[in-house]
Length: 191
Image (cartoon, rainbow, N blue to C red; front, side, top):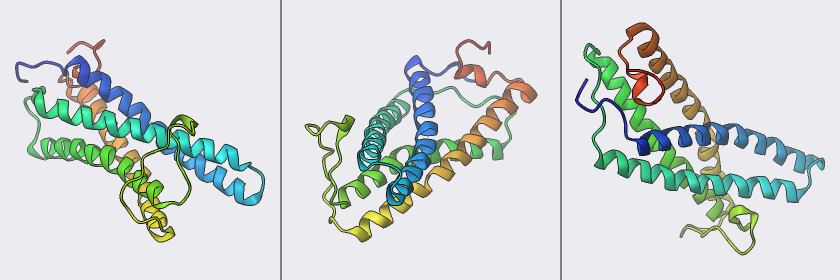
């Protein structure tokens, strides 16, 4: 390993906050689809659906901001090197998964924002009518709303797949390789 044994406290904090938010948003997004179906079936009131969507949009904007902060931090601060003995394909896979996460952490909120901006319905941060979600300069039409919304919704599966790969690799390093890699991101573990 290099002389940087751990990630910084800022990197660790952003890692775990974003992990929880991303995972929660995937499942909340699926819950919102159920609410929407309930709206069309007449079993869920419109206000409940709007509140859920506005909460999702507010959290998505928080993820976007935190992801940009995390990326800026990552690009301006040294990170721990890869453990000695890692095979080249493992290093390549680790880098690919990390950068794929950045693409999704930034791309998913932007695609959701495009979808919200293309909709004629207003969006509010924190369900507060005095805090409208700013619209991106995209056409307000149903086609763009549907396409961007579908792309946004489909991103849940890649997030879950990356989570699985990331967690499996971390556990492999902790319990099979015993190289202290996991301790760099979980402060209570010893390296």
